[in-house]
Each structure stands twice: as structure tokens, then as C-alpha cells.
Length: 518
Image (spheres, rainbow, N blue to C red):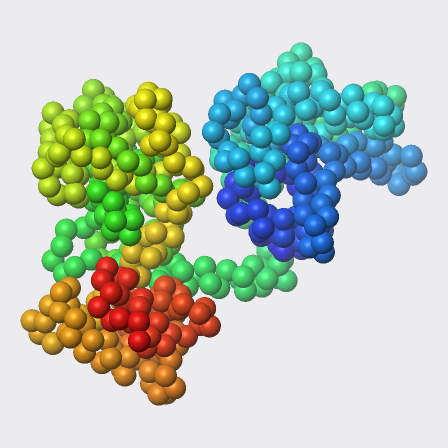
């Protein structure tokens, strides 16, 4: 994306809350790559590592001064300052647990609320840049915070983001406009500031343009298409094929009732984590789709659109039952109301009609047992049942960064399923791969001979892709799937898999060590 922004010739950008999602190393790299000014007006603790990697760091500018050109082309145009503000800070709705401590290179805790930071910046401009006529803020926050900034009298206009819809309103006696262009770059916002004579305050006009009304730039279009090529492949890479004759999977009413898609994904998490149960928040699902034949990587990413860190909590059955029942209460009292907070659960966690747990991990509930439960770090901090439990059992709390990403777990699970299917396809009819070590050895070496077309002692992604086509069919044989499957068992990360690596990897997938270490 930064490459495209550079080709657009943007003068300035600011942080949004999702810049934290790419990881700190990648965020620093993107900041280095951007050729305009990356503004940071309200996160004073942010230090960006220097690209030299010598341990040095630098701060981003708090503002950027633009000298405007009069319409007649004469000299002496007005000067304005652009600031960049992101959501967060003490006293806001984002104060507690909205950001992980390490977010924004560890600076998330230093965020100052936008209104406070804007007041400080306006004063700083008066002292350091007396020729600047006004501050024009770029913001990334909710509409109420933008309205508060507009009503303060500090700025002539607020150019906002964060909200996904187009929004526009005029605030206060001085008529400050708040304008948000919506998501996906579907609209361009044109803001004109005009001064007449010696007026100190500009006249502001705002216009929205539909981007689709304009022809795309050929060079930029080619650049975008080149970088989207892997995404195009991702969109058609099948990661899960429904068994013949099985009922469709659906997430359409995931916020109103148990969902078969959610159950499948909870089962996947439980399998990889080897837990007794897995919970996923209904509000985290975004696909709202029914799948009758296959699910692709793209489908999976749509379903779990938000970055989600999964951790394991030790919980007694009573607390687990209370959490599930409390989260699903609206399903009973207000069945027509969306319930983002409801827990979707794995197939082994059976909830009776009265809200009690009929089984955990497919077995009768043991009241005295401590169960291992997979849950998102988001819910660990926000579930209303857990604070009292943690107060009484502080040893049960786990660090939010101690888990693994949900999408990463799902990819591992579904690629592991394909390895298992390949192994089963190479075994004799009636052989017990789960418990018969000799059957597993025969299947393994039979598969290796099938894969290693050039007989060089290693399997490459292309060879695995051919094997997937031959054994599992064309739907499951994209190069992207093959590369992910190779990565699962490629111990030395050389892009190829030896027979030893394959044995060790498949032993892990089959949850046994039957292949030994030789």
C-alpha cells in the first residue's frame, strides 16, 4: 500500500489504529518507505528505529507546514499546518486494553487524547510558526471525538477517517465541518480553504467525488495489479473441502445462534492447541456466508477479519459455564437482536437448552476438573465473568502476547488436514494410521517416492502441488497451499522437505512420534 501512496504523490499521512496490526518491524519499514510526511501529533513516546539498524531512532514530525499559492500566481501565499491524530489516550473509551502494550513500537501508552493534543499543538504553532494561519487536522477516531474537536474552535475543518461510512456534519457557531470519506478509497474528499482580503479565518468548502467516475492511471494500475497477483491466487486457493453429502456450512447468523462455520473453526483451534474447549467471539466473524462446497483462504480471512491472539486459560467448569451462559443471554431474551459478545464453541462443548454444559471435550462435565480453554486475549480482558475469577485465582491469568494468531492456527490446521489426507491416500485399505507405526512408515515412504519426481531426495512445492492434484484433486492443489504445507514441515527453512523432515512433521500432525529421529 505504501508504494501506491508514494505513486499518488501524497504529502502527508497519519496513523490509524490498524497500523498496529502489521507488527512493529513491518510498521517501521513502512514508515521508512513512505516518501511524504508521516505525521504523529499525539503519540509523544513513539521512537522509530533508524533504517541503518545501528540502534539509533528518530521521532516523526508533529506537524507539516504547507505554503499555499495564491490563485493569481503571486508570492506570499498563506501558510497552514497539517497535523495527524489517532484514537486513544487517558479518559477516552480506548483507555483500557484497547492496544497491546507493544503496539506502535511500544508507544501506544503515550497516546494523548486528540482534543488535548490539538490544544497543545495550536499553542506550539503560535510560538514557533507565527505565520501559520490555522491547523488542519487529519484524524483517525470515532465521530463523537471529531465533533468535539470541531466544536472546540481550534480548527476550521476536521478531515477524518476510521468510520467506514461517508459522514459529514457542521459543528458550532463558527460552522466547522467534519468530513469522512468512508473506507476502501471509494470517495475522494476535496477541501478548499479560501481567505478573502485580511480575513483571519478561511471559508471552507467540501466536495465528495466518486473515484469510479475517473479513469485509473495506467502506471499505477499496473503496479497495483502486480502486487495483487498473490492476493488473486489467495482468493481461489481452497483450504477446506466439505465432505461429499455433508450439509452446507454457514456464518450468516453467527451473531444470533450457534454457527457451523464457527464450530468448525473452534474445532480447528482446539485441535492445534490440544485444549479441552475453544471459544470464539461471535462479533469477530465477518463472512456472513453459506459455503456448500469449499472454503478458500480468502473466505477464512473474511470470516476472521480482525487480528486475534488466542491464549489458553485454566478454568473450572463452573466458570466456563457462567461465561458461555452470560455471553449468550441475548439469544434467549432478545433473539432478533445481534449479539456480538456471544461465544461460539467447539463441537465437544455441548450447551443444553437451560444454558448448562452437557459435555466438555465430548465427555461428561467434571466439576472439580480444571479445563484448558482456548480463548482470545481480547476476551480475556473483556469478559465480565473473569475479573472476579482472576482476583481469586491470579495464577490463572496469562499474558496477552503468550498465544498465537487465530489465522495462523487455522492455516496450520487445514494444511495439516491435507497432509493427513495425503498420508491416508498412500496407505492400504483398512490400515490404521492412527496406531499402526508400520502402516505409517509404508505410507510415508510411498508418498515420498510419489512426491520426489526428480529423485533428488527433497520435495519442492511444485512436486507437492502435483501430488495434491493426483491424490486430492485440483481444488486443493494451488501453489499457495503447497507452499504453506511445505513450510509446516520444513525444519531448516530451505524451501524443500527431506524424508526426515517429512517424518518428523507428519508425526507432529498425527500427534505421535512413530517415525523416530533417524
